[in-house]
Image 1: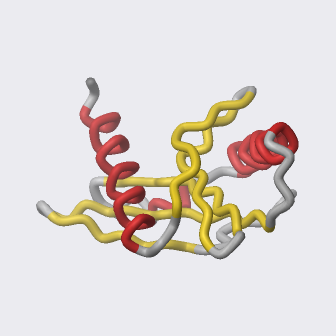
Image 2 (image 1 turned 180 degrees about the vertical axis):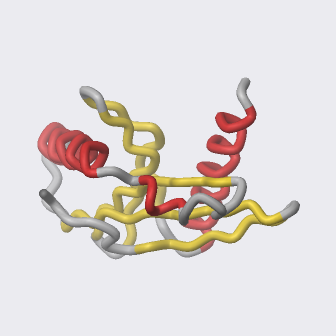
Length: 119
């Protein structure tokens, strides 16, 4: 597996662990619909948190959250609309980013709530 794929998988697991530690219930991981993949769907206090995880080995080229592009956001919104409809959910939906930067052998985790809105 390519090194960046391994870093991405490690980042997603760190994000799941972080969310569980912060009293989120993980509902789905890697939910796919059409051209989108939702990294994590979690629930806390009747809010469905849609979480995009961005992991980088450094922030030399920008912060991880800067790499979430408009097309990806539109695809995520479409996928989440499908998920909510298919599962007949009546919940508040929030889009978050968990940004992770590896520094030496440690990871800095930042949870950005309401990171973007519907377009």
